[in-house]
Image (cartoon, helix red, strand yellow):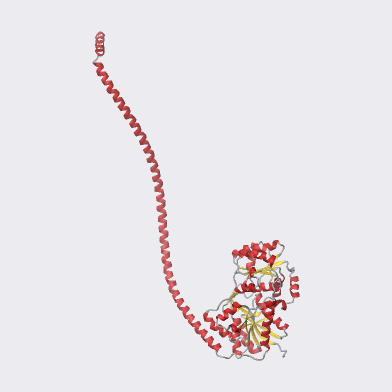
Length: 515
């Protein structure tokens, strides 16, 4: 066999600091060497530059793939792996120090290879990439077109396979194998892990790794701290480990450590690839949201819990595949209970089946790489699907344009309603103020009526007393009247009496005698 190295364009996310993506070229290169294949990888990513996490390989911009193929004549293009099968751009910091988040066109990592491979009839291999969600209808024929030039199409899970079959691909053309990261134990010597931990002054199995990203719900932080403190109180060191500096993982760790009064470890320096890998490999338990963080721990026989607050299908399927569904949680309120159960009962995961399966996968790639035959990629199907996709995109654009026009009309109506609402609100406030004033007046009037009512009751009582006195006086008057009548009658009778007449005579005699 020719010992001249195979020149392979290897695409993926290598120009930003995201731990999982950098595993793919590292493992692929190690497996090829293990199997006696001499190859040179040319790394390609959307922006290019120098490989992150201190790996320092040259990374070429994907837009240069065609010109570099013309210069080097690549033997194959390999889509390296990771969650790249979508048509969206993600917001990324290009370096740890960057303040700005830029659009990062991840889709280029698998779209551009298909175009270059089709144009120059280059072997195209998919090395187990993964998808996130179903493609919109107008992308389905484009997906079929982009998959036409693929000579070996493999994906890392059935979820991704279903995305492709839903887009019209024949399921028999899609190979499903585990993520290639399961090969790391065979590719990365244990002494590298031990030496790296010693250099970091970290003792294996004496610490817990926790990983999260900026999507961690803030209300779940107390539950996270409760879980980590459980192990802290058992004597474990707690290490908050960023796996994607360009996702700004560190910001959420600073928040957690601030609320935990700084009792956890957060490295100030930017860790390199082997330091991150070694910390994951040497921990007692991994707790976090990272797919490849969990795989690294599992590969090295460590306990692991997925706290998947973003409910990522790939992580759920991973723990199902590993028969560890009990240690997959999405609700932080169950995290401590799950961690305690994992601490007491979880045994090392057997990944021999995954490794055996991956050997089969890589053997298929090697067979394709070493055969002289090339498939003919010059049929019209690729172009026809592209043309059909453009028509669908145009139709979708026209539809969206009509929606936008209707939206503008609705926005105008909404503005008018908003103005009417403002006027109504102002009138309502005015009426509310008047009502409040009237209500205050009513309260004042009620108070005054209450006071008058009190006075009236007092006057009524006084009138009643006077009336009673009047009745008593009337009774006395009647009594006096009767006494007067009786007296007058007695006087009249007395005057007619002999005695009265005698008295009158006596008084007359007295008068005469005085004279």
